Image (cartoon, rainbow, N blue to C red; front, side, top):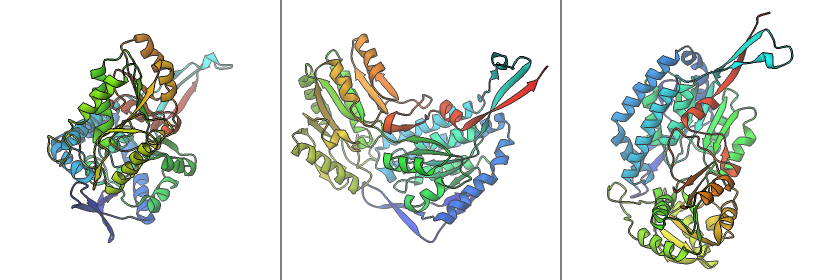
Length: 470
């Protein structure tokens, strides 16, 4: 797979092999760019700005709709690539593609809904006799930087709104899983003038800083680790930034919860894509009054999961992204057990696979819950009552999403109001998301919001136009 710079495929002599985490086979290779290619890609995007701003909103929408149709026609092929490069079960890859296609459609629709507003200047001193309104204009060039776990959906959440707002883009996918994202970008780029979408592949240490500090980049939209997000924030200068930096999302199960629904939410939330999800359930906070019943059922449901070849539609879980990731999960679980956690099921690794694991008697001093563990772990923390549950949920540097299971409206609303998170779901786990909702966290989970309407708004800036009518 090659890069795309100024409408042309661009290659290099040096390449990185992209390996299938299930069998270790080479899926494809991508070129390893340096700072020169970053400069070329950004220059191409900067020079293409006028070709996009000169289009009518209707025309941009039509082209995004055309890209939507093209992407929809290749859904199965994309899902296969996602599974090959990430190890994600094929049924989950198909789900990612369905969401991605919908995200592109939502962007095509939103491109025709970018509104300004009238401003009542006569409400201020000296404003009588003046008339003013705002329009929202594009920022310019958006840098889109994405991780491995949702290689198409997370990329399209940055690229499609950027174009809907008439910005050009430079897209850098993760070098762990760049293939599907690159192919998606090419499909959208075919509908627009050269330079509107550019792709760059390379090591973050080599090209990341060159991209985020380039003076022609106007906004950076990044999804990834807290450490990288803080680095970007420190180097971005006056650029606008949106940082989605992961989570340590709690699932609270109160004593009046529907236990079966809560267990289903815990299983779906903790083991989705082997736990490699920023908004995955990372901590299960259970009231002592129902802890035994909940835990017994959770263990039974966890043991029903089918683990194996991710291309098999019957599999619920595949491998982690690579063996190092699996080893890190193994060490984290082993440390928790050494510190007093009780292993109820799972807890074993084989190459890139790690079994879905339930840990009981976990406390917030253990690394498995004090930090974000990217693996298929369901750690259970016991509490007494809603007050302690909320306090425990907030005992983290993160605040992305949260889920609360309760049949008591008062307790549900109390949790919704007091839990420190960008989103709180009542009777649903934290992994639930629709692609039109505002998505983004608080504290170390990042700044800014994704979700098409909100991303488009953040990829434009207001300009005031006024008339003196006196």
